[in-house]
Length: 442
Ligand code: ADP
Image (cartoon, rainbow, N blue to C red; front, side):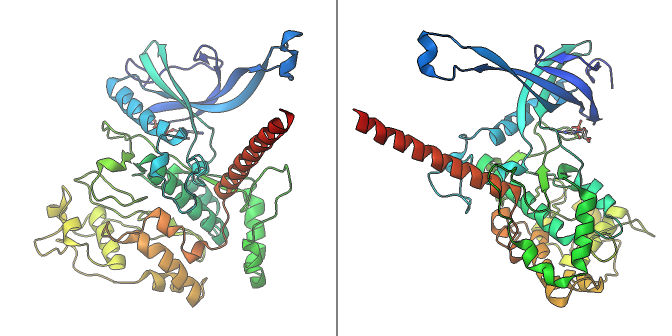
């Protein structure tokens, strides 16, 4: 790692970008980079309070603003640098308000409103800055992000015994769909690696939340009232939905390609929004395929939990389990993979697995007893369209946000967008009022 072309050896207290960032501690590391918590020190020019005072008293000062950020310091090798630069191009689209305004088609937006107001923006990691840093191992691309908390895997593990509460699952599902819709409709990006590790969850007080949800689950009458949006006090920090905030992020490839893990949707033929797509040559896997379904009975169960067995590999078992749930792969999908022929014979049968135990999602959900018949069919009707094996048949994020399983769920992004919309309206009103007044004065 810490060699020429590798990681940059960081010292605590080390300054980056001309002293703007000071390293506090390590947050983590990966194949591609090390990630550091840093304090950003920014000086903002304070303006004189009253513009008329300019001529008499020049009241100019600097205000120091401090905040914490995560700096990702990429290995200095050529490959890593190229990948990082590609990723920066994609990330910049997610943070610029104007770039793709014309592509906006979200049902949440009225035409003419800036693309800034999309409830999904709050659920995509904020990319704040980037710069280069030279050290003993070369020149490193550095990317600055907001600091995030634990990933979804951590939450699932924490809730192992009882499962993640249904309301939290709904919040997370809706926030992820909003994020995907924002990425797709506003930035032209398809997130191709959606998995629990890339879904960062912050919950103000996980333990309190779990306790309160447990209390509720023993009182069935609270079901409807719990979905009602809470009225917000003026000036209070706007949070809702057990204060769950989900952020999706992409992770650069560990098999390095010249593109980040996400790809621009316009470069792909036949894409559908918000779907997981793989490079040609890979088997196309529907999103959520290895996502643990939490909240099923005691603790979470994997929807697919493959293992190798006599005469077949783990991958073959995985494919067989997918077929047991979703039926056979459509031929074009089945034979689109680089390794298709290793798994399937000409007739489209798995070469080494003959026995199947077909089961429907609905039946699996009912077996877990926790759900009533109507609840299981609602959940199954939410999950099935995302799992369809034919990419053309798979539902996209924008459509799926309207699914009844998400009815009554208000996300932080909805509130943020609403606040921004109202602020915008207010500023228009002020501008109008000022113009009217000016008209009166003259
Ligand atoms: P790589 O691309 O090198 O694999 P990752 O993006 O996976 O690196 O980051 C490595 C680790 O750093 C993550 O597993 C996580 O623990 C931590 N990390 C990354 N980004 C952030 C962030 N924005 N806030 C907090 N921790 C982060």
